[in-house]
Length: 122
Length: 338
Image (tube, rainbow over all chains, first blue to last red; front, side, top):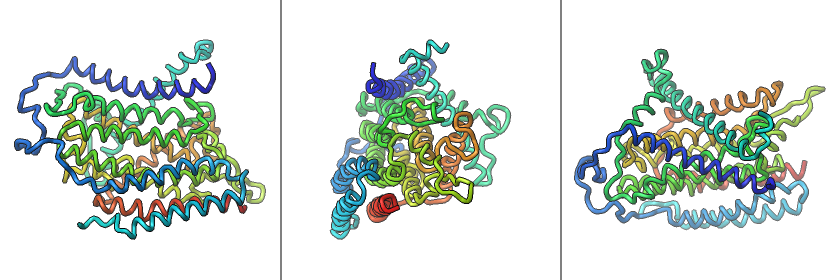
């Protein structure tokens, strides 16, 4: 087995063990805890009064636009890492290129802020 | 004994158990430290009786108590998602420790992509939180989950971009490589080589941004809006009870350990301390640095009031993202020119 696959297997085993740990602990707790559900107990919690409407009520997700902004910058972040590692070898040319790239993205951010994306009073 | 360790699977099993043991122990110590430090910051004594002295066994006593509590799942809840949520949180947190180096050799797996992997694995927990918020079918939970998602979106960027400065300075993404780069002499004062961690090598802005974004990712005060007790009861945890709640709680503190470990490795020199042999004292040095950062987080909790939701977005987009981009440009310029 090559080191390449060992890397992936190690990561998978660690993540899997995290899930297993939760499953085992909850399973062990099942031997100790009482189980006596009643209709009242299994109601959704709403500060002691009967729940009004459904739990998945409509919500104004104000940060929808931020998700779009995030996507743009996150792609940029992925792009910037290989550049950062190789910067010393690539020299001044790569530096100027990246500064131009960052400046364009910053201009986009300034535009979004000036458009009032961050103002919440409707 | 040594022959057994040559087998990949045996060694891997040993690593998983050892890493989990260390993480959970440190997490329990931090839980206890938070109880005690919070108490003393408020002129109280805190836990006093459990364990006989100083209440040292309080977190263990809590865990045993939670084990015996009834596990309630709301009738309207999306049951499979509701039950999977704590698993996702803990799986993501444990996965981070694959790349945390405790000494030059004491690292589970020295991935080439180290830093990148750590940041990716570190944000999986938020997916678990969003799952918990959505599946509970509770209005408070839903609001808490959505807030957690918004926080991740806003602060993931400063967190990632702050790290780029360190990657530029060291020229590698491997965690061991980054620590070794900080162990190199920064400059010479006469005959003495001065070795400095990156936080003193011009990455102070990056460190500050990383710390702020880290608090937001971990939902620690002043960014604890996802569980804001005064507004949302307990946010995404409202419907969780007994041992399931404990798993989230443990995951949260394991997350503190994970993020502190990453921050100390990237900015504070990790397992390296001038004058101490890394191979012998590495784990102790790293744990001390993790403890220091955890203490700062507990300190912040009793110092700053909670932000409002739009203030949180405003800080991230107006200040932290532009500042981290400027930090990248300045670091890169220094690297190329000098």
